[in-house]
Image (cartoon, rainbow, N blue to C red; front, side, top):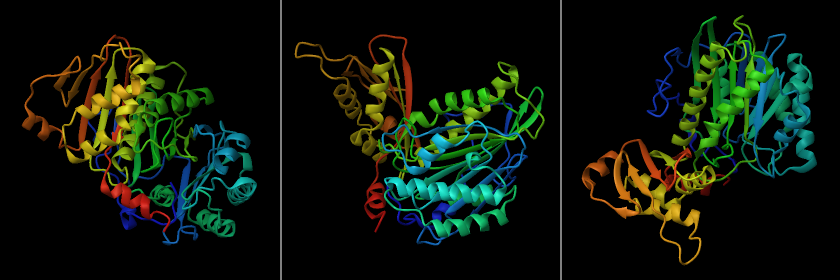
Length: 434
């Protein structure tokens, strides 16, 4: 994706869907309370978002997030791509990822495919952010999103960093969120309260992403904060596990970004520590997992013109087989356009799975699979079965649609969340840099 302008206009200022946990696929844990969007960040964090002239629209485009704790703990993950952007290279190779204190993020320019100059530009802005807030450069993670091949307007960003420093506040997460968005139609932000056996902690996150989204991350920036005290190895474990169950499980268009970044930062300011392998670690992990999964679903639902989202669940066979089948369905333009139109054309699912798994020779018997849409079985052993077409059509006209595929064998299972494919998706991506 390239991002020359905000093609979705002022809708990017819209608030997140309320309540935050609204998908049937992510039930809110009983010990988690949604505090709404306006309560501010967990203790120990401040944020700001300003306009510094990266976006021609004049919308906010630079975000600064600071952890004021003397001993922060963090973990980070980046795009699994052969063409990582300069901010990914810099952060991955030069930052102390277990003790990050600052995030500097911009939208409107990805600083990708920019070579040595791009790395130098990212380093300059990293250093300026460190000086502005009294941190070391290796404590500052940089993240960018926007136009691939565009160079950062460094002088503008240096002025923007100073402006953002003066605007830092605990309630600045909404401004920070707005500053990192590109084609997002709405915020992807949450503030939660988590009840543990040792006390109550806060958990917040800000996420952006709507297009160029595929498993092995998604085109996204995701920043999560907590005032719980975590050991570095605990933060690393939780982020890795929860990413595999959230952003690694979603796709909009099957395209992998150059800039994916996800960070968990822990201030410890609540005084509540999570002991490894304790009940509190499990409870916090459940909360963080639900947070990340709902954010991932929000990103899919915002898939540049999306009307509906689907969840494909594949069972049976072996793990590589179910993964291939699920991703084939989720990335099929035919399945995605049928989802957009509310059309129960399950033959497209058969085609996608069969094409992905291959024939294995002319003498091989057809693959026997069972298919259900919204709990209505439409196919048994790859043969059509009778069903109420009118009832099924009504069922798949809802905002969330589930596809279930059962392959021969047993023991393996996977899921992928995916968006439909609309006329607006083509319009947005055709116009994006002009």
